[in-house]
Length: 490
Image (cartoon, rainbow, N blue to C red; front, side, top):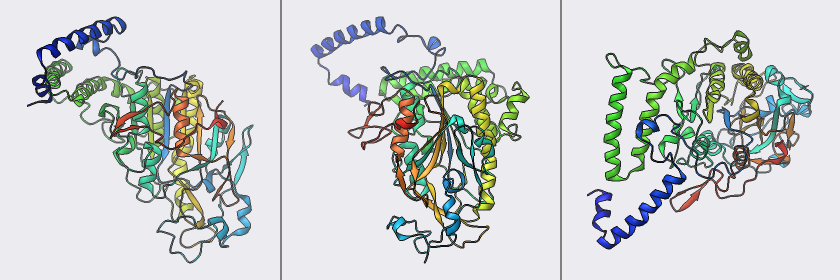
């Protein structure tokens, strides 16, 4: 017996008419207040499948869309953003115990007999009117520092990649929670009729080693309806599997089939009341629309040479970070709410001087191009761009230290991220670390604070966007205190 049948068996005649009368009144009122509520299926297909929740945004947003550039594996802040010139005189000296102060180590270095200091071998210089210090490994990003807010004091409790990535992108180290993109598409919906609200790309990398695995939970919907999970565009082959109809099936045949399937699913929903059936109906409709919208999205033939040059020489090579960055601009231009690009293999326990430059070359030119492209189109005014990883790297060397070669272990105590665009105070450096880039001296920013800041810029009070699950009003920022970082807000 289905849940609906069980419910109906429990109804008395008196209760049925009492509740029916109240329900009829509510339906009539709803039809007056929300005239689009009872559209036909054909009408429903003509509007966005991702409406915002009632009452959202909570206040006028600065940002309407988010592009999240996630450097999976943890970029070395000491070699890229957190300039520590005093370390040059400390090469191969032991890191003072007063600095480490018994803090947690990974199993990869906890057995080392000593912790020799490894100064960065890369030159830093001030750039822009703001004078932000940037490594020579990021010459293109250095050209746009006047548009960035560089946060040097991000920190987390997680010390291993998988829980740390899960933590910053879902708000919890334990899998099962919705990702930030799912929260935003659930709360704010999308302006795109023919594209998903949340799109994910995982471009290839150049460092000569295997990378940490990526799990779907980093863009999953957790306990939210599955329609809010990220849709992953593939780096090779068709961007989406089965985007093309098989031989002998044209668009009209596909439309007729989907209409019949939708009717069957609706009957099943009326019997069982399972909300995931409505998600299935909506996702079939979105898949049908994407058969036209995705080929148009990925065809960059109409982009001018001047625009392509902004992103660098790899922009026309499918599956590169540069190509993904251009698609990110094209997606938000078409109404997609959240685009997340996960670039892998920033995990440099050894051979950092060999691999870090390769990773930087992958993303440097394209990061500049993305910001400039958004800016010249007027999109940066209401688009938020975030760059960073799951934690930082240690000042001491993992394994053998040489003048020209070293590696760094995981370091969650402080690391650098940057933000740009809507609502961000440009040309800002926020927070200060000690002389070893090991501890925070001023203005700490927990990853909960970072997520609260993103939500604030999107017009959301992080304490009020919640979903009841397992007896708790779940939030992206959890139950602990979190505060938007006012010092980087315009």
